[in-house]
Image (cartoon, rainbow, N blue to C red; front, side, top):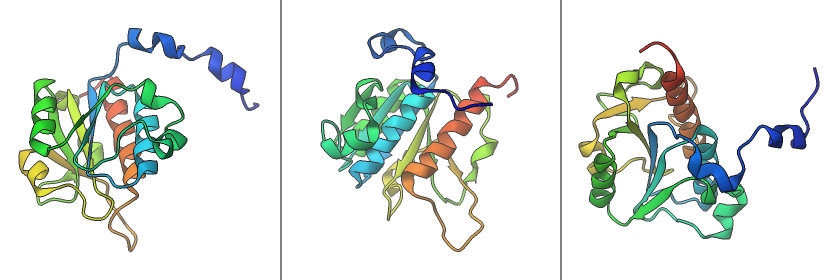
Length: 180
């Protein structure tokens, strides 16, 4: 075994100019009042890796072009379809217009573990919230479901971008699997 070179990996990837040709997964993301530009960039990059259909940015979440976002996004702001909505209501309406269920990644009275999502829940929009206060009450009230990442240590949550990546790639696994 050996590590692949950058050139070997690049040969297996679709060119940026052809990204519009690829069929994306029925998975959307919504960033609800994320404050860190670096987290936003990281979530763009993760969304690119998962072939997210569209990323919705909402509230005071910063949006491209911003050099701090670009630093962690590494070009993915140009390959991931995205749109910004000033209000939660506009954003939720746009997601519902796509035909997706709104699924908050939050500790709620009805949250299920993130690994219990079923293929019948798709198309789905994974919502991640503010690094301190989480997802707004308005978005939780409009949600179709809630998932959470079980925590076993002292802290009750993970970094927003890390949590997004864990839950997002579980959704990818579920969608690509042969079972429901």
